[in-house]
Length: 121
Image 1 (cartoon, rainbow, N blue to C red):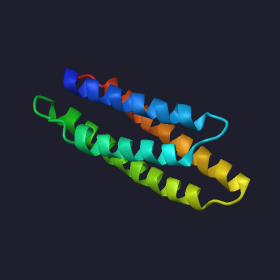
Image 2 (cartoon, helix red, strand yellow; image 1 turned 90 degrees about the horizontal axis):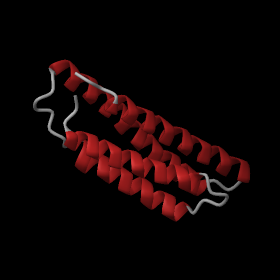
Image 3 (tube, one colour; image 1 turned 90 degrees about the vertical axis):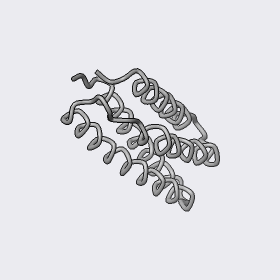
Image 4 (cartoon, rainbow, N blue to C red; image 1 turned 180 degrees about the vertical axis):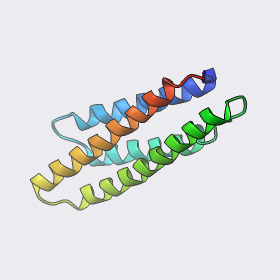
Protein backbone atom coordinates (compact mmCIF):
# COMPACT_ATOMS: atom_id res chain seq x y z
CA UNK A 1 0.00 0.00 0.00
CA UNK A 2 1.15 3.52 -0.67
CA UNK A 3 1.99 5.71 2.33
CA UNK A 4 -0.70 8.27 3.19
CA UNK A 5 1.63 11.16 2.24
CA UNK A 6 1.94 9.74 -1.28
CA UNK A 7 -1.82 9.37 -1.55
CA UNK A 8 -2.34 12.98 -0.43
CA UNK A 9 0.09 14.33 -3.03
CA UNK A 10 -1.35 12.27 -5.87
CA UNK A 11 -4.88 13.35 -4.93
CA UNK A 12 -3.79 17.00 -4.88
CA UNK A 13 -2.22 16.47 -8.29
CA UNK A 14 -5.46 14.89 -9.51
CA UNK A 15 -7.42 17.87 -8.20
CA UNK A 16 -5.17 20.25 -10.13
CA UNK A 17 -5.71 18.13 -13.24
CA UNK A 18 -9.49 18.29 -12.72
CA UNK A 19 -9.30 22.08 -12.47
CA UNK A 20 -7.43 22.23 -15.77
CA UNK A 21 -9.96 19.86 -17.31
CA UNK A 22 -12.79 22.10 -16.06
CA UNK A 23 -11.03 25.11 -17.53
CA UNK A 24 -10.75 23.33 -20.88
CA UNK A 25 -14.46 22.49 -20.88
CA UNK A 26 -15.46 26.15 -20.75
CA UNK A 27 -16.82 27.72 -23.92
CA UNK A 28 -13.97 30.24 -24.02
CA UNK A 29 -10.63 29.18 -22.60
CA UNK A 30 -8.46 31.88 -21.07
CA UNK A 31 -5.02 30.95 -22.39
CA UNK A 32 -3.22 32.92 -19.69
CA UNK A 33 -5.04 31.09 -16.89
CA UNK A 34 -4.47 27.78 -18.67
CA UNK A 35 -0.75 28.43 -19.00
CA UNK A 36 -0.45 29.47 -15.34
CA UNK A 37 -2.36 26.36 -14.23
CA UNK A 38 -0.15 24.05 -16.29
CA UNK A 39 3.00 25.76 -15.00
CA UNK A 40 1.80 25.29 -11.42
CA UNK A 41 0.98 21.65 -12.19
CA UNK A 42 4.48 21.06 -13.54
CA UNK A 43 6.04 22.71 -10.50
CA UNK A 44 3.91 20.63 -8.15
CA UNK A 45 4.96 17.45 -9.94
CA UNK A 46 8.63 18.40 -9.73
CA UNK A 47 8.62 19.56 -6.11
CA UNK A 48 6.03 17.32 -4.47
CA UNK A 49 5.60 14.14 -6.51
CA UNK A 50 9.12 13.42 -7.73
CA UNK A 51 10.59 14.12 -4.30
CA UNK A 52 8.40 11.56 -2.49
CA UNK A 53 10.50 9.06 -0.58
CA UNK A 54 10.34 5.52 -1.90
CA UNK A 55 11.64 4.14 1.41
CA UNK A 56 9.48 1.34 2.67
CA UNK A 57 8.15 0.37 -0.76
CA UNK A 58 9.00 -2.95 -2.31
CA UNK A 59 11.53 -2.82 -5.14
CA UNK A 60 8.90 -3.85 -7.69
CA UNK A 61 6.45 -1.18 -6.52
CA UNK A 62 9.18 1.46 -6.53
CA UNK A 63 10.16 0.49 -10.08
CA UNK A 64 6.51 0.54 -11.18
CA UNK A 65 5.94 4.02 -9.75
CA UNK A 66 9.19 5.37 -11.17
CA UNK A 67 8.29 4.13 -14.65
CA UNK A 68 4.92 5.89 -14.39
CA UNK A 69 6.69 9.03 -13.19
CA UNK A 70 8.84 8.96 -16.33
CA UNK A 71 5.71 8.82 -18.48
CA UNK A 72 4.00 11.54 -16.47
CA UNK A 73 7.05 13.78 -16.79
CA UNK A 74 7.07 13.20 -20.54
CA UNK A 75 3.38 14.08 -20.82
CA UNK A 76 3.93 17.25 -18.79
CA UNK A 77 6.75 18.34 -21.10
CA UNK A 78 4.56 17.64 -24.13
CA UNK A 79 1.73 19.56 -22.47
CA UNK A 80 4.02 22.59 -22.24
CA UNK A 81 4.80 22.23 -25.95
CA UNK A 82 1.09 21.98 -26.76
CA UNK A 83 0.56 25.25 -24.88
CA UNK A 84 3.26 26.95 -26.93
CA UNK A 85 1.63 25.72 -30.12
CA UNK A 86 -1.76 26.88 -28.85
CA UNK A 87 -0.43 30.39 -28.29
CA UNK A 88 0.76 30.56 -31.90
CA UNK A 89 -2.41 29.09 -33.40
CA UNK A 90 -4.34 31.60 -35.47
CA UNK A 91 -7.15 29.61 -37.07
CA UNK A 92 -10.13 28.46 -35.03
CA UNK A 93 -9.77 24.85 -36.17
CA UNK A 94 -6.13 24.78 -35.08
CA UNK A 95 -7.02 26.26 -31.68
CA UNK A 96 -9.71 23.60 -31.27
CA UNK A 97 -7.26 20.83 -32.19
CA UNK A 98 -4.63 22.13 -29.77
CA UNK A 99 -7.16 22.37 -26.95
CA UNK A 100 -8.24 18.80 -27.66
CA UNK A 101 -4.62 17.64 -27.53
CA UNK A 102 -4.16 19.39 -24.20
CA UNK A 103 -7.34 17.80 -22.87
CA UNK A 104 -6.15 14.37 -24.01
CA UNK A 105 -2.84 14.82 -22.19
CA UNK A 106 -4.61 15.95 -19.01
CA UNK A 107 -6.83 12.85 -19.21
CA UNK A 108 -3.78 10.64 -19.64
CA UNK A 109 -2.13 12.20 -16.60
CA UNK A 110 -5.32 11.56 -14.62
CA UNK A 111 -5.21 7.90 -15.66
CA UNK A 112 -1.57 7.63 -14.54
CA UNK A 113 -2.56 8.99 -11.12
CA UNK A 114 -5.41 6.49 -10.91
CA UNK A 115 -2.99 3.66 -11.71
CA UNK A 116 -0.61 4.75 -8.96
CA UNK A 117 -3.41 5.23 -6.44
CA UNK A 118 -4.77 1.78 -7.25
CA UNK A 119 -1.34 0.25 -6.61
CA UNK A 120 -1.06 -2.09 -3.68
CA UNK A 121 1.83 -4.13 -2.45
